[in-house]
Length: 209
Image (tube, rainbow, N blue to C red):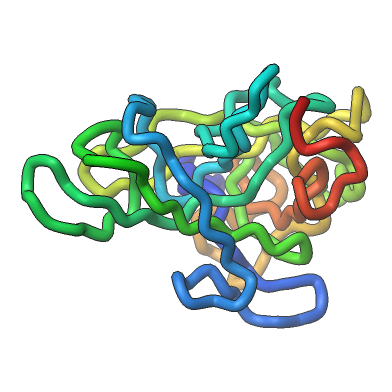
C-alpha cells in the first residue's frame, strides 16, 4: 500500500545499545535547555533544536532551520516539551510545544540530547530505502500543528555533500508491521530510522562560534 504524507517530527525509537526511549522529563539522558521568553518562533513536539550562536553566544535554543548545518550550527537535540510561567494564566504550565509567546521569564525546554538515540522520522519524498544507509540528511521543518503541538518535520533526501554538517544519518528503514502507513519502503513518505550526526555531544566540531 502506498504511503501517505503525514510527517510527525522525530520520535525516539530507541538507542544504539538497544535501550528504550528516554525522552521523559526525568529521563537520565534528557537535557534541560532554555528558550528565551522573547523567542517568537513555535517549536513543535519532535522538532530539532539548535543552540543560539554568534559573536556572543547566549546558550539558548532555537528551532532548527533547514540548511543551518555548519561548523557553528549543530543540533542540540529533539524537543519534547517545555515548562514556563504563563503570562496569560498566571501560573506555571507544562506544554508539549512552545507556542512562541505567553512566557514570563525564560522557558525550560526538555530535549532528547542523547548522542546514542535513534529516531523514527517520515521521508519528505523518497522513498528512502536501503541504498541510502550510511548517508547523512537534512530535514524539512514544516509547520507546527497549533492544535496538537506536533512537529511536521520530515527527512530530506540524504546527500553525500558536506556530510559532517547534516543533522541526521540514515541507519535503517521501518517495514514492519506491513500495511501501516509509512512502512512501504517502495513508495514515497516511508518511515526511516536515523541517528544524530552533527550534534553537540557527538560531533568534534565546535558547538558555536
